[in-house]
Amino acid sequence: MSKFNKLNKLRNAITAMITPLNEDFSINEAKYREFIRFQIENGCQPLTMGTTGESATLSHDEHHLAIDICVDEAKKSGKDPFVLAGTGSNATHESISLSQYAEKAGADGCLIVVPYYNKPVQHSLIDHFSAIADSTSLPIILYNVPSRTVRNLDPDTVATLARKKDNIVGIKCASGNIDQITKIIKMTPDDFIVLSGDDSMTYHLMALGGVGVISVTSNIIPAKIYEFTTTMNNGDWEKARKMQLELYDLFKVLFIETNPGPVKYSAELMGIMNKRMRLPLTPPLDANCEKIKAVLKQLNLI
Image (cartoon, rainbow, N blue to C red):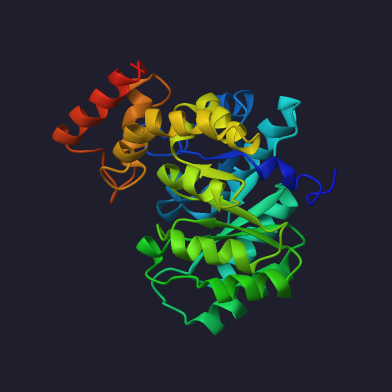
């Protein structure tokens, strides 16, 4: 099946997967494989090496390993999921290298974050994403998260890239700006895939015409998030509204500290994997751990 024929699989729930680490902080391959199966079996498409996977503290060799593991487990699943690989960088040549590796490894698409730290202007961002798109035949999902990159990807720029490059097929919106997201949906082609990058705003974004979420929460409740997005894609907005209100406290508490600290701590409480992270990231403070526990208990997750 063509990578582009599989794009409909992104019109639902994609998990920005956390990465299990051993005591020496290397990737725990056995646990990672188990976790990927858990996601696929519960309806979510796997995203490996996104921000939630601690990509910023892992080497390129470890990125390669994570992609290889994810592609291998996807093939074994029998469900033919869409494997999305986080291949962004603040250096264009590094992002090209990672994207080309993902294509060679058998991934189905790339998630490319706005270059962080460098603060390129909008015309520079067009050149950056265009160069990456020209380097691979894989479909590309842009990723706008200005709270981390300190540079916003403007709606005009998104629309230009959508028109200019056939393999730039969508965007993950994590700006927190519903007005900007509205403009993106309005300015891009009808088949351009607009995904929420913020669990708590998924309902709002999909009501405007977005088609799914790249989720942190689905790390711990993949079946529930799959049900949530499927409910909206099926047009049952009243059920979805009730689910939004039910899950809202969980959506928010998982960002009580920098992601992925809270979701990794939640995963440990639920017996999914340990909370270990590489510095400079650390598990949540005790006071915040208590708040996370309270929400998980409220939802009968622990």
